[in-house]
Amino acid sequence: MAGVRGYFHPKTATGRSSLIPEPPWHYSGDLLTIEYRTDPERVRELLPEPLDLAEEDPGAVALIWADWQSCSGSREELLDPVRSQYKEAFAVVRCSYRGRTYSRCVYIWVDKDFAVARGLHQGYPKKLGSIHQTRPHPYGPAPRIEAGARFGATLAAADRRLAQAVVTLREPSPGNGFVNGHPMAHHRWLPAIGKGGGLALDELVESGAAAFEAGQAWAGEAELELFDSPTEELSRLAVREPIAAYYRQVGVVWDGGTLLESGTSGAHRSP
Image 1 (cartoon, rainbow, N blue to C red):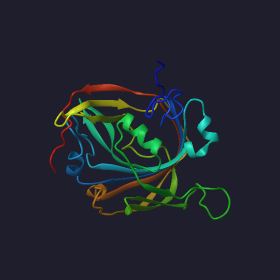
Image 2: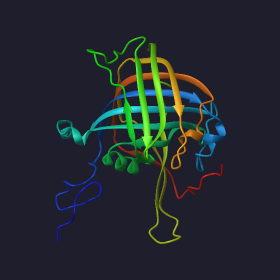
Image 3: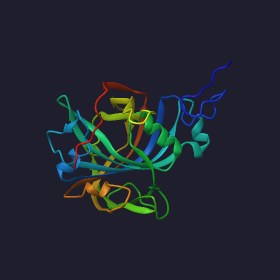
Image 4: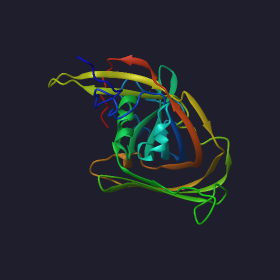
């Protein structure tokens, strides 16, 4: 009997229905990044063992909006845009593992199912949401990428607005922030099918870009508001002190990660 094919569910005789293709995955996107400081204890409560707070600036947070086009190695999805285009908003903190500083995505919302599936594979805690951001354009009323340009961004989930921001560009910058500038340290968790069976999959993994290119980054200021929700906790990372805001266009390739540990407890600290 012939086996079923496909990188991810659903697996079929041809594999054509698989929700996501085999890596490498290629991304082209516009990123709005807002960095600020929150209470470090609010970061600590999101770090499961064996992770701990970063030694420097432990309360730093990056809230990032991204408008992506993505594809597999064949590039075929770019000519079928419903399979390639999606938006996301995500919160990144920094953490320490065995003396090394990592970035870690603690919250993330996307608007397509294939992006959720990729996140499950990579260890991103992806959920569905509604994400919008101003797009630059060289003609008409849309902002150009230049000093004084203003970009808006909103995030909602389960019919509740979670965040809104306005970024005003000021000047070119050598980069687009420091919080999301390290390899990612993520957990891949899957509960056992048997009741009370713990975790069937329990891995701490490292991943990052297999290739990266980017345009000129711009720095500026942001007006950022976070809102409470009965089903989301982003507002617990409350803004104590603004750092900076950035705009940048990037190209990224993701092609797998590295296992750091398996069988860790996965238990979060109590607030």
